[in-house]
Length: 398
Image (cartoon, rainbow, N blue to C red):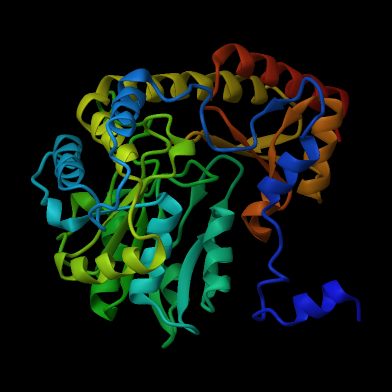
């Protein structure tokens, strides 16, 4: 046994064998290749706007570099309550909110607060690769329930979801609007899930990161259907969110969670023992994003909707491609007929079409044969990418 093998064999089981994210693998493969349009990762092309960055810079210059409130600045938590009130048309209490380091950490806080090793979490798939990996690394079991795809739409069958519940089930993890599908669950389906979880005393972990990117509303900027529309904030629902997507802040790594007030002291402890709080001066920028960022967010949504149209209209003309027009989020998840290895196809497209896409199997085996494309990008870049993909598919019709 080599020295490296001896070190790796001493790690906790599962850590060394957990596969690399297919999205990261694609990024590494494309690194350094010229003229590749990068659409594999979930972020827009704009840097954080000045009205957000400047308050953070001023706070840094003013010396706001010390430890702070573990659950976030009181002013920021109040701004979160006010932002939710504007978006969802009802009152929210700052005491339900905790600021954390990224949306990913909000999910980890949920797992730490409500789950134990060996517990099961039901996960509709295809789903963001980090969910299952995070559960496995924490010693928990993701129980995947596949959505149905008929070539034009995705459907979640609540009966199949509930049939997966066992005595070890502690939670159902719901991401809507979803990554990678762009699928949005209706209020009817959300109500059915909420009723079943109430009946069985299960938790819901609700990842609503893309809740404002919704293209089927009656008015611009209307949030997607949400558990927030139908639930009591003091029941067993743990909401996860982030500043990353709405306000072009992916690199800031700041998020938040909303949970029953009874969890406040628990979450304060968990934040303390995980990170000891979020960078103080960054929180000043987050306050500006919430208080002054509605117009910027509206522009982000409008641009994503334009990108959706550019990509979908072009690929709808390409041979051997099937997809559902995404109702929300900012991804197109499309199937290429005859493709049996999404990772290999992704690499081929990088080399031959010069477009970087995430392989569908990165989101579980239910995604094999699919590719994910992020359309929250510059319209001119998306138009070029759409032409490259369309032309490649036409030349390589299977």
